[in-house]
Length: 205
Image (cartoon, rainbow, N blue to C red):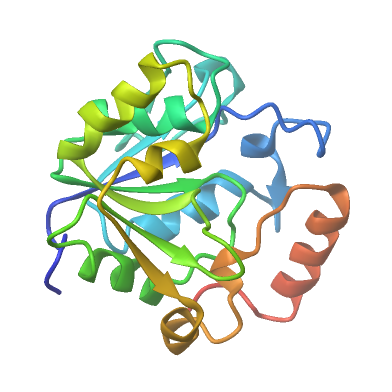
């Protein structure tokens, strides 16, 4: 791979309040494993350095190689988590994914990393930007922090300040035909659907 290959930190955002689910999604089980572990498994295909951003007391026990880090200013949403991931990154690039994306396809993660060279960030754009699956350059941290200092916590506002590259639906479908990577588990109904997908063998290949 070109782009970000070989210099990537994989970061899982696990600090959300999970209001629609009613329980911490990081600990939620799918197929007998915490939802979070599916995301970590996918990130290991492109990243040697792995971290989880979220309150330690709300996380399941993590593998020894995975670092748990907490936001400096908790409760400020995923943009604060992205800033934390950039600060804590050991790589020049950070692949950020939400903890509720159990079917991330390694081929899509590699494609995002391949497209990263020469910009601040790469994000899938399928019916809108999926800004909780994104590759960012570590050098984008000052721009992200600048948006946070303005009191803005929306990820879209930060993306507007970055040199952003998007991966359109056609390009995404070439490596993930069924868009499984973009399936997120927000509600109990989503969890039921994820369990059905898993039973039908729709786990990442």
